Image (cartoon, rainbow, N blue to C red; front, top):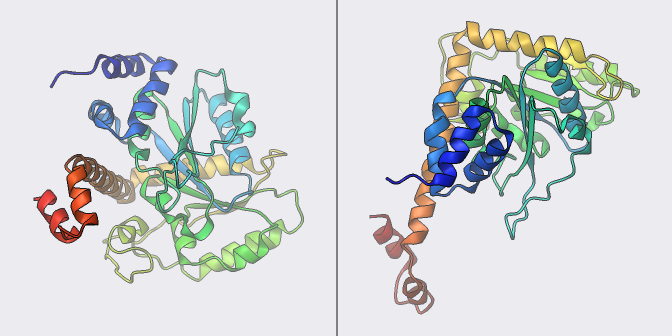
Length: 334
């Protein structure tokens, strides 16, 4: 197959560490078309090079501010950081309401940081269908840490556990009712819990409430990621694992505005990365990320190829009731 020179140039540029090429490669990867296949083929081998940290939680809890602080701390360690900030998409155009992300603008111009806002394109759970391909681009660029900030849809945000190695659930003292109402999905995907805006009144109660909620389900001998891939957290389909989940999620109070509690957060992230490397949980999560990526790719590829086989006459026949939709779909799928 003849290679597209535009794609080849982008691939070579990423390998050289060229920021413009990284931007082009991410755009191609997000497109989901045939050029995206070349990007994925070139960079899939970089799977697992970076720690992927997912930040989730309701809107307005300060995820962007917290991300900016984490980037600064990692840069002080001379680590290269990538960030994918997932924004909601228009259900009509598929375009994203990509915000200015003013809180992370301070890092623009730093060649050790690459930040990209990407559209969720209607994916349930607040993630983009091409999120994995874009992660591989940043891994190939040499990022040590990749932050994935989701759109903020609260308890339905369990999909982040399929893409991230470490999930940080962020809330604030202001959301007391939300903390009380936390359900199994949110509580089980979190590897770390952060009560941000700790300069506000009520942080101790918020931390206590989360710890109490976590205490109700500490005997977790099942991998959350495996449950997500075998029917979901609420489907009642459980997959036995050979070792219990030894990691006990810390609950931390922090203030992205004042800098309070950020070092303990960084230390907890380091400890979780070490835990994943030293136990089978790390490999288990990588395997489930591969399952998810494969599932998304096959679905996207089938959809793309399926639509190319539908003619205008086929649609006319459906409208005129000359063809049954099920029969037409079955014929095309053959």
